[in-house]
Image 1 (cartoon, one colour):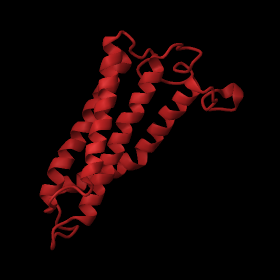
Image 2 (cartoon, rainbow, N blue to C red):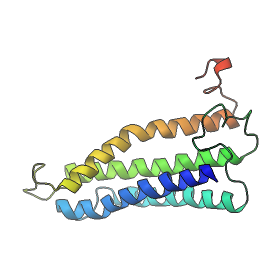
Image 3 (cartoon, one colour):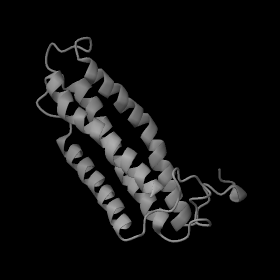
Image 4 (cartoon, one colour):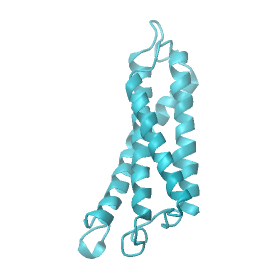
Length: 170
């Protein structure tokens, strides 16, 4: 229950709701007709939806991840959590974070490239600045989360040693 609660709370609610507000309000506030990449927006929604459906499905099938609240390695590695539970979890984290990363890129490009004529950076509203700063934070932080969850998945499925200290991992 703990990793499912944490995943739903952060990756399926907090980040997507904030970014959804940005996707809706930022173009209106900067005078743009639409977001910069509407197809990227659709792609990110369906990747996010697939990750969320994947989590709810494994929860209903009694295969929820058993990796603890934070999924620290080595406790989330193949030695301590056998089976496919943590594999599904690591994959859906990757999906939801790729979606968040795509939306963050979209917000930044919309603000910097699609402002209305006369709308300088000094005139954009504070909410737009907050979304730009948050989007830059997502752009710089989420690739590490995507990489870490992908490395965990590769450690579990392929037998790599990214998180195995005995084999030179960290």
